Image 1 (tube, rainbow, N blue to C red):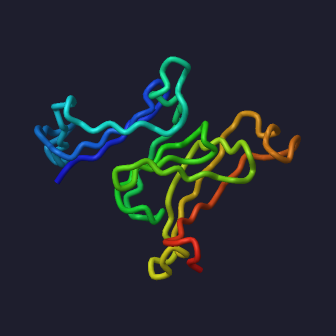
Image 2 (cartoon, rainbow, N blue to C red):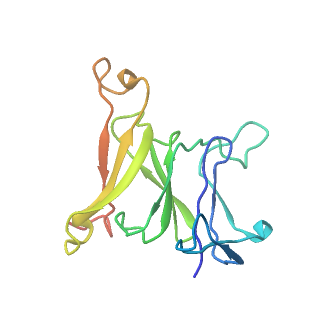
Length: 167
């Protein structure tokens, strides 16, 4: 059994997956379950967030994720324990699913600035129709969105179909 964590933030657009526990210790009280940390960081796989890099550093993404969330219950349809980061420069979210980065882009309105994310299962027996991700926008200038002055921050519902023709 491993420990999974992901890190993405300003200056650190990288996901790290840890699956080999090496050491355990207790935090705060003996009743707390031991937390295992992988101590050999040199052998951890690193996953680059998608996107272009700076001039002279084309292999590094300039994506600056604001928030990272671990999708534990397959509300997205991408699987359990999938780390998802906000894609502030990509108008959506980046998920590390099955060892590769997948971008979930919000196509409308243009300029969606992802700030938060959560999953919800309304009907576990309804397949992809009964579950989904809910994301919020948090731009400080929502009047720059399509719609102009008076435009409010948004909440979007994202559902991933098992195939494009599923209904």
